Amino acid sequence: MRHIAIIGSGPAGYYTAEAAQKALGGTAKVDVFDSLPVPYGLIRTGVAPDHQSIKGVSRRYEKVALTDNVRFVGNINVGSDVTVAELQELYDAVVFATGAPRDRPLDIPGAQLGNVFGSAAFVGWYNGHPDFAALNPDLSGKTAVVIGMGNVALDCARILAKSREEFAGSDIVGHALEALTGSHIERIVLLGRRGPHQIMMTPKELGELGHLVRAAPHVAAGDLPDEAEDALLEPGLRKSVTALRQFAATPEHIRAEKSIAIEFEFFSQPHSLEGDGHVREITIERTHLVRGRAEGTGEIERLPADLVISCIGYRTAPIPGIPFDEREGRFANSEGRILPGLYCVGWARRGPSGTIGTNRPDGYAIVELIEADAASGALGSSAKQGRAGFDALAKTRGLDVVTFRDWKKIEEAEEKAARDGAPREKFVDVAAMIKAGR
Ligand SMILES: Cc1cc2nc3c(=O)[nH]c(=O)nc-3n(C[C@H](O)[C@H](O)[C@H](O)COP(=O)(O)OP(=O)(O)OC[C@H]3O[C@@H](n4cnc5c(N)ncnc54)[C@H](O)[C@@H]3O)c2cc1C
Image (cartoon, rainbow, N blue to C red; front, side):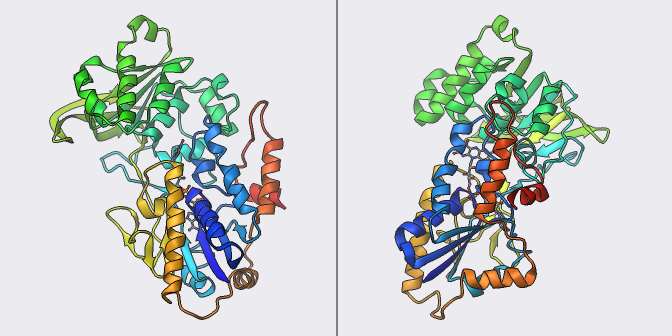
């Protein structure tokens, strides 16, 4: 019997469990740990609440979770409740699927001012991550600045721009819906160091900005490169740039019908934030491209900024004793192997890029690697105790494990509490989750 511990129940974790099931069937027992009492990682706490069809992928993970040899071990933080060394004693292979939950810091003067947030925090707030439920962003100002030109920046801008009615059918948490309903924001500036040809926004998500009830995207035609140059772009990016061209071509009188402007501010890098404890202004430096890289021109401008959200990437949280690549912000690994017996997948392996589906081949490849290491004898030969050993440890330590059955009760309670038309009202507090599961 092969005992596998997977740390993290997001896409990478469940694709790895699925691959282990398919490759090893009844000869492997897989425990999927998560520090939260609820599974699915960023499917629950990252993917936008108004993109429910994407969240539907969790049904696939549920099928895996319900197979005989896979179990969910929720509410266990690996690193504090149990150490990696302890898991290595008990399991043949330990796989980190812990994602990249920390914001890459915005390293400019003033970044510590009030109402300046990283996207992990802001997204976690509207998606009900217990760590960020109390964030309480101040939405009483007029201008929000969203730093970054990727899909996460788009999510943040769209969520800030939508009317209450446009959240129908979403699972945005109640506290965020109430706060956004009372929001005074009428200008959302998307700030990017480079130009339209360098955005990381996918066409479907970008196109959504053109169909908002009370907000319109603004792109300055002068920022767009010559149209003939679009032919050199990869097809997805070309479509996104076409969307930007359409936004730029929208007549002013049509844009003026909308009360919220979403402005694309290209060729601008944040220089500093200023305020009186609370952010009030952002200083930006204009840039130009030199061989595809943004270089500052020295030209400085000021913009009002009552709320700042930086969407500039994420880092994996290091775990003491586990080799870590500081520069890349993820575990040091070679194709997913940290050391024989210790592996990583998903964002913890590659860093924060790609779609949900990109994590699938990672999971399958790591199971092959585990098998190869087992066949070469690199995993050692002594029989490990696996889940029986973990259960004994959890009992002595008084750990409050949340099982998949408990999660199903939490899910049922969330579905019962849903607003009209919404799929669920999430618990945003760990104690409330655990109570609902019992
Ligand atoms: C805001 C946002 C929106 C996105 N929207 C989309 C989208 O619309 N479409 C799309 O295809 N992709 C989207 N993505 C990308 C997608 O979410 C990721 O590709 C995917 O979630 C990465 O999977 P993962 O399993 O590596 O990490 P995660 O999903 O982050 O899962 C990591 C899990 O590990 C757990 N964990 C972490 N540390 C520990 C520990 N020490 N002990 C125990 N458990 C731990 C966490 O609680 C979490 O459950 C989005 C990402 C973000 C940030």
